[in-house]
Length: 206
Image 1 (tube, helix red, strand yellow):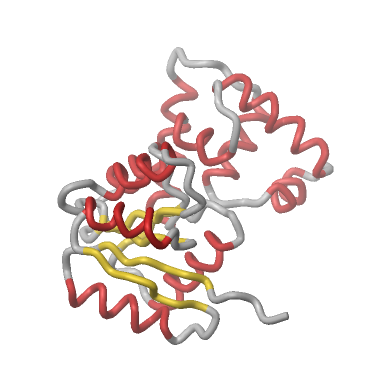
Image 2 (cartoon, helix red, strand yellow):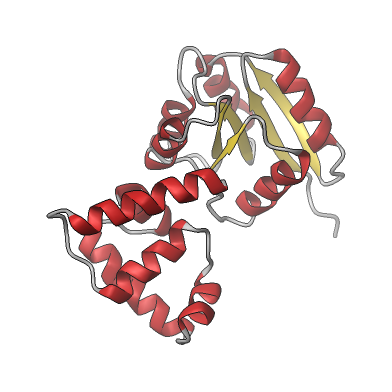
């Protein structure tokens, strides 16, 4: 049985960048660009109409920002996964997008290989974080460790740091020399301490 193509919507006010992204992704045979939008409200309407698998949304998209678009999609309980793109390398808009429900974040200056890696990761259900955002979040975690916030055990802090760096549960188990079941237990306790229910939210709250 032939798998259905992965559907992608590009929301960006820069038509040149939309075309460049579409060209890069169009080279992947199992992927179809189903639409483009130059503002957040138009993007949201197309998402409701087409329900694409993934939306690449500019962080400062007019009408609705990329982060606001991610929140709207999450609230509507749609299956679409939103990825936030930022032009100038600033990490705050990317972090805000993740906090509001985005499944990934990337610089608009990212090369073709990173863009394809992002699409593949998000398609697998993973949260994709660029290196600059990983470093930003790790520093936030370190700052939190020094503040009067919900206290984590040393092991929970290690697990959370690895999550922020993009490690899977299996990779965390290997890095810490424990079983995957033990990692799952640490994650459950970590979520309880932070008042969240899943990985991306744990990183966003932290």
